Image 1 (cartoon, rainbow, N blue to C red):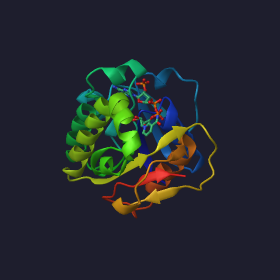
Image 2: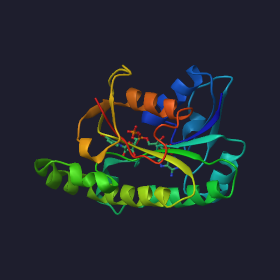
Image 3: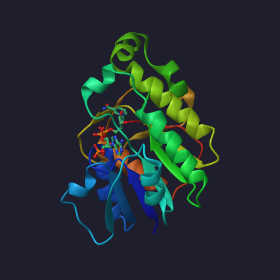
Length: 212
Ligand SMILES: NC(=O)c1ccc[n+]([C@@H]2O[C@H](COP(=O)([O-])OP(=O)(O)OC[C@H]3O[C@@H](n4cnc5c(N)ncnc54)[C@H](OP(=O)(O)O)[C@@H]3O)[C@@H](O)[C@H]2O)c1
């Protein structure tokens, strides 16, 4: 069983991943600015209040961990229309901190259309996507590059459109660029994929698109 740090554990995919990791028998350190206030409790769960942009907070959170899962998201929809630097700045801090410590395995969520997957979005979706998510995804692309340029043992998962549907365990893991396409996937199924990566190295140094 592994000790896993989840950065962005208070809601969404990060919260679901926390629950699934605990159910799978892992030790979990849940990290975010608000997670310490949550009522979630478990003998193998440790909740840590911290800012992913703060090197001291990250250094402390990494202590004794085997694997890191980074699942950051913007705080509000309005943030989509402002300059975005959360993903790249937090990743710069995390990569430097991990390179200085024994923990090397990093599993990160970005999204379909980040990095070289942007070439695979359909012509019709391209313009509206750019208007709504262009700033966030430019920063996610930078985030991906920082991870790829690191010496870490990374996997970058790029889910399609997220839903609050069920965990079915039935979803596509598209490793090859020729297969990349948009689609929907539930947060619970994305969490299922993340939990599997803790012990499975099949997708090491890969950037799979996840859709149903
Ligand atoms: N919506 C979609 O269709 C879609 C599609 C593909 C990819 N994605 C991406 O998937 C990711 C997860 O989305 P989600 O909706 O499941 O999660 P979310 O609700 O956006 O949760 C984001 C998490 O990040 C944490 N966070 C944000 N800033 C932080 C900071 N400075 N320090 C520490 N923690 C911080 C939040 O916790 P605190 O506020 O407590 O700090 C929260 O736990 C996002 O990157 C999103 O862009 C979304």
